[in-house]
Length: 191
Ligand SMILES: Cc1cc2nc3c(=O)[nH]c(=O)nc-3n(C[C@H](O)[C@H](O)[C@H](O)COP(=O)(O)O)c2cc1C
Image 1 (cartoon, protein in one colour):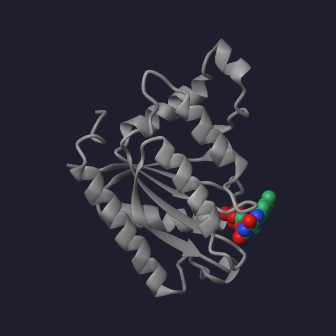
Image 2 (tube, protein in one colour):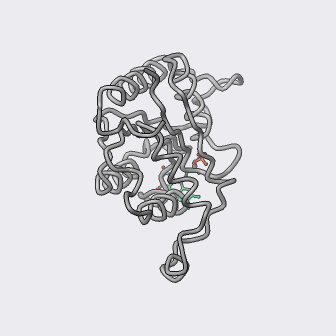
């Protein structure tokens, strides 16, 4: 069986360190023969959540993203920390998808969290905030994580991490994500 995994960076900017970190996770997932669907929050172009918009109807771009998450068994998110929390774009994505009915798409998915920062703080406070929101939505989060500080110096010119231990942590987390996703009958939905 093939694990279907949605991968998402919490930063919109094209030169994002979290996009780079996510790319390494995607490469590990592909080595494990997972089917990876990369969601790009920049091109997703979601309007800010507004109950009045929802009152008229969930926007089709939200429904389309919810279907992509719904189809997956697992989700990996690599996000920067903004003001000790998560970026508004990522929270907006979570909030919109959480409103989709009859079943919001995060329920019972297996989740993995990673983060990179240009600073020294390792994104751990932001990761805790993300953990809290995803837990509220029923995501079965893996206890491990990946955290990269001083990201401007962490990657070489090919995009690889200079620190092989962090690369090993990514490989381990992605292996857990694939294997737990496949073993979780609640997450095994879709085609
Ligand atoms: C609005 C804003 C708030 C930030 N707050 C934090 C913070 O609380 N902790 C931190 O480590 N870095 C913070 N940063 C710096 C980001 O970690 C840094 O810009 C990082 O490179 C962004 O991730 P990206 O490279 O994936 O876009 C903040 C940046 C912005 C734009």
